Length: 137
Length: 405
Ligand SMILES: Cc1ncc(COP(=O)(O)O)c(C=O)c1O
Ligand code: FES
Image (cartoon, rainbow over all chains, first blue to last red; front, side, top):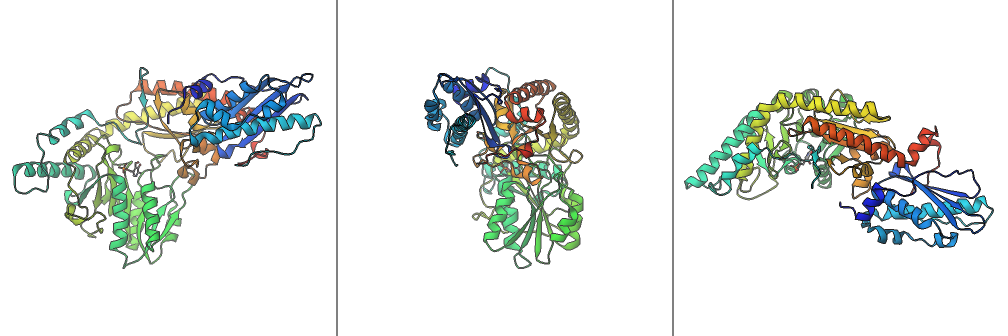
C-alpha cells in the first residue's frame, strides 16, 4: 500500500511527540486503544486556565504509520483551539486531510477518541460534569 | 528508486536466477511446441525439455521423474493433494489431520473438505512452533486417511520432525502429505527417506519462475493416486490436465539443478548472515524475541518481535528494505498473523513481528545496511511509543485498563 505524502511527512517528522505532566490540573490525558489491538494512543492537552485555550498538545502512539500521522496531525490542530472547537474535530476531517484509505479509517477514529478522552479527563479534573461520550467501533 | 533496495523477503518469492532465465528464453519463441503434440518436431522438442526438467527436479529430491506432477504452483499442488486424496480414499475414511500453522492453501482446502463432509483436526503446535508427536498420535482415529504437515513454516522457518511423523504414518497406514514449499531447494529434502507420499512445492521460492509448481506422488509401496481437480486432456498421468508451461518447467528444472549444486554453499553463507543480523539486533536492542524454535529452523529465516513497536509502523521507517510483518495493521482483516498466534505469542508480540528471509542474492553489505536501518527504526518507534515509555517507567501493562475497541 502506498502512503500519502502527508502521512509520510507526519510519520517521519512527527509533531509534538512527548509527555506533559499529568499531575497538573490543567493537563488532560487520553489513553485509548490496547496493545492487543496493535494500537495505543496517548494524547495530552495543556489548557490555559484563563483563556480556556489549548496551549500545548503532545502525543505518543504505538501503531501503524497512519495512526502516528493521525495523532501528530491532531496535536497540531488542537493547539490554539478552545475546548469546544477541539470537541468538534471529527475523524473524517483527519481522513480527508491525510487521504487515509478505508482500511486506515479506524486509526483516525482512535485519534478522535483520544482527543475526546483527553478533554473528558481535563474537565473531570476541573470539576466539570461530563457525560461519558466515546465512539464505539 | 535511487535508494539501494535490499530484498529480505525471499520466503514470499525469490528473484529468478539469471542462469535460469537464460535456459528459459528459447522456449518462448524459437521452440514453441506443445509438449503434448506427438506429430511434429516442435512438440517432440518441447516434450524433451519437459522430460529433462522433470528429471532435474526429481534428482533434487531423490525420486523417480514419473512421480512428479506439474501444476501451476504450490497452492494448486496443495489443493490437488488434499482434495484429490480425500476424493480418492473417501471409502477408507473421512478424517484428515493438519496443523493450525499450515499455509492457507492447506487450511482452506481442508475447510472445503469439511464442507464436502470430511472431518479435519487442526492440531495446535507447541510454543516453539513444533507439533507434539503424542498429540498427533492421540488425534489419529481409525477413519484417518491423511496427515498433512508442512516441512518448514513460511513465517517462522520452523522445521517439523518429518522422519518421526513419517514413522507414525507408516505404522498406522496413513498417507503422509507435506507442503514442502519453503524447504525444497534450501535444505536437503527427500520425501522417500521420511515416508512422505504426497509433497507440494513451487518454483518461485527456489529462484525459478512463478506460475509453475509440482506435486510429488509416490508410485510404489504404496502406489498413491489422487483424483484430478482439473479435468481435460488427461495430462500428467490423468491427475492434472492442461497444456504444460514449457518455459516455466525448463526454468523450474534449471532452478532445481542449481539449488542442488549450490545448496551447501548457500546454506552456510546465509545462515552466517542470518546469525549476524540476529546477533546485531539482539545485542543492540532491548526486548527482542525470536519467534519459533531456534534449533529447528531454516538457515536463512529469522522472525523477530520488537516489543512495544508496531510492525507496519516499523517497516515505514525504512524505504530501502523489503521484509514482512505479522502485524494486523498489514493485513486487510486487521487480525495479526494466525501462525504467530498459534505459537501462543500474545497479540502484542504478534503485532511487533518482522520476518527476515534471506536469499542467494543477498550480500553481507545488505545485512549490515538492514541492521542499521532496523536499529534506527526500532529506536524511532520506541521514542514514539507510549507503551514503551510505560514499560520503561516500570508500569505493569497487564494492570492497565485498556479501552479495547
Ligand atoms: C508454505 C507455502 N505453501 C504454499 C504456498 C503457495 O505457493 P504458490 O505461490 O506457488 O501457489 C506458499 C507461498 O506463498 C507457501 O509459503
Ligand atoms: S494502528 Fe493498526 S492499522 Fe493503524
